[in-house]
Length: 439
Image (cartoon, rainbow, N blue to C red):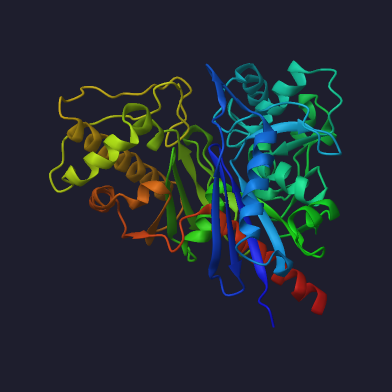
């Protein structure tokens, strides 16, 4: 019989990636479609959500030429955490999206701080909740019905059902993950409470694919749309990490750390929060995301320069340089210490660009080590293994540098693409649905 297939879509800031796997987890097809970057105006960073749909459509059409979409049983979508917009019941976008690293909602964050618990992830100008209040203040007469995260908007486009999200994406909107509910203190902020989505568990069924999309892409009409997650959690799912003490570092435009634990860890002052993990109710992903990462390297060097310098790195000869490599056009840090005023520290700059490049990589490894030490001190438990995801994981010299500075073995992730993790989540949701039907 033809094999069942499962598809994951990873919606980022610079592109959409799609993976198709079979029931054994073998990846049969992968596709990436680039998108124009968000528009930045000081601390405000915005993107037209139609760009996501256009790229997702191109990605699906391309994947449909590689595999038989009539065999697709489930689709799941991940997206960047705290990238949000307002939309209507029919999915029409009513605003541009404020992106995950938008920190323009300073006044709104101050209001949230009056009511939110000290360790709530809804605190801070880049939270989903601060952006919701920004929309309320900026568009008081807007006839919107739902706040959508990036993954929600694309899932709604596929299913025709809006006003639905997942527990992971909802965390920075104020969702109480431990109690699995919207907390009462949100009502004191005076916004339309029906803007809050229904928070499903990652892997729960949103619904069957909308008939229009099934026809457009040649997908079987009974294909399920499964509640997704954030991009960093999808990368964790893809990595092969599966035991408490396993961790994943995503080396992309930002530096994201997540460790699998048996108890949640929260510390707003350090930018640490915990998501429920899809695989079991007693597992959590504790961690945080630094604004430091590969983005500053792209600002300082061309890709051709980076490619030429990488073979010249000497990881066994430390430079002794100490930087704080935040993006040059951005103020503020989230983790391992939340500081809205922190700026890049990239001096002294040596004449030798290779040494400068290596000094930045060493500094990023130090920030990573500091993050894991902080998690341990706050109760995350003993670190066993660190899997590496993201484009930076391909740099062997950086891998060596990290291995010298981190407190546990550093391994390459089995799969580094978040889209693969989203496909695994689609498979998990489909299996759970079959199991429930058999009971």
